[in-house]
Each structure stands twice: as structure tokens, then as C-alpha cells.
Image (cartoon, rainbow, N blue to C red; front, side, top):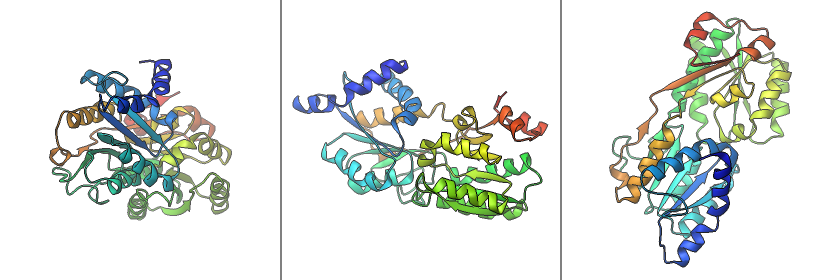
Length: 325
């Protein structure tokens, strides 16, 4: 499926569920609930739809999808309630922890498959990873355990650093465990942290001015759907202030960011499609173990490193899965 087909599919998707209901639910309906933008989700959605098709479910033919995208956390409960009111057969949540939490709060009956970067047990979504026990299951990359590695990689890239800024969105509940993980890891590396909050676009200018005033040596961005939507601005600000920055998503490095380290999402759409299809076929989320990320990738943009006057150590180059010249 190419981009044009993808967009065309989305154009027809909005009307399809209504038509399906007019035919007394001739086809099952999937609710897509995301705390990210449609554009950001597109690279995931296309293979997800392909995965569903390979398992016998094709949008517009024998399944319908209700899409709900929002970057505003306070709208999430209302959007989750909309999907429940439309009596979808399964809800698939993408993004922050509060997306899955909103879906869980909205229904205890409709199966929910989540895609998360936090521990779903810690956030009360499932009883355990192996035995979820309720109407939720899905996939987690346990981002809090990865962010400390990102700090370590930043320290290796800028060995003279003493103060590292951390940009976090306080309105996202999944970010606090990541900040705590960094606070534990920093003293071990001989680093101090400058924690800065940003929950809307207007906060960025003040945050980077503080970074400059405090003379921070680098920046670690906490993975967050809001930051994902503002990626271009954040990369531009890091360049303007001459600040080495680490991101969770390799797409930031492709767009000009310095470095990233995060889970490899290559096979995740297929795994998600498989779980959704199995639930549509009658399996219960309570008996489907939560899947965990097993592969993590590192990317470095050498052009950006050169612009910052950084020499990338040979050991980091050897560790990198992707080097952009």
C-alpha cells in the first residue's frame, strides 16, 4: 500500500462504520485511539493494515475502523467514550499511557490492545505481563529502562559534559518514571540534571533559554507524543543553541537530530495486527501475554555532529545501527 492508497483509505474510512451500522453491523469495527497525529502514525498504520489484511481482515471489505487522533491529553477520555458509544469490537490504543488508561476507564467489556512505552503493570492496566487478567493486553517497550542508556550514550558522545538538560512533558503520566530513571543513573555517570517542563509549544523558547543560561552540555528528550508532533521545532532549537541532543525515535535523526536510541518498531505493526485479529476471532485479552520489545536501535547523524564540532568515538560508531552521513 503506497501513501496515495493510504490517504484514500482514510478518506473512505470515516463513512464506512456508519454504513456498517446501517447494515446491522455487517462487519466488525476497530477503534483506533491515538495521542499522536495522523501523520506521525502513518508509518505504523500502513503495515498494521497490511498485517490485518494478511490475517483475513481488510478495511472497507470485512472490517471498519473508527479513527480518533488527538495531541490534547484532556480530550482522550471523551474520544475513548465515543468509541465505546459506537460499540466498536476492539479498541487499539497508540501513544502515551493515558491513552490506554482512558480506554480502560471507558469500558470493562470491549477488548483493548495497547502500544506503550511504559510498564502496563505499574500503571494499573494489567495484572501481570504474562497473565493480563482483564480486557487489556498489547505491546510495551518499557521506555523507562531505556532512557538511562540514552543518557549513558550522551555521556560517551560528550565526555566532558557535567550538566545534561532533560525535557519532559509533565502532563503525560508515562514520563515521570523516565525522569526518575535518569535521576538514578545521572550520579553514577558523574552528571547533574536540569529538569525542564514543556506541555505546549510556547514553553520551548523559555526551556532552551534556561538551558543556555545554565550552560547545559547536552539534552535528553523524554519520549512523548507531543514532542513527536513538534519534532522539527525541537531539532531547530537544538541546532540554534548548538546543543547535542538525544531522542527516542530514529526519525528525529533522519530529520536532522544528533542521536537516538530506542526500540526497533519494525515488526510491531505485525504483532499488533496479529493480536487484534486474534481477538476478532474470539480470543480473550486476559489470556494473551503482553509482548515486550527485544531489539533496540541506535542512530547517529554525522552531519549534525560535525556542525556541533563533535568527534564521534569509534566505539559509538561501531554500536550504531544507522549512521547518517
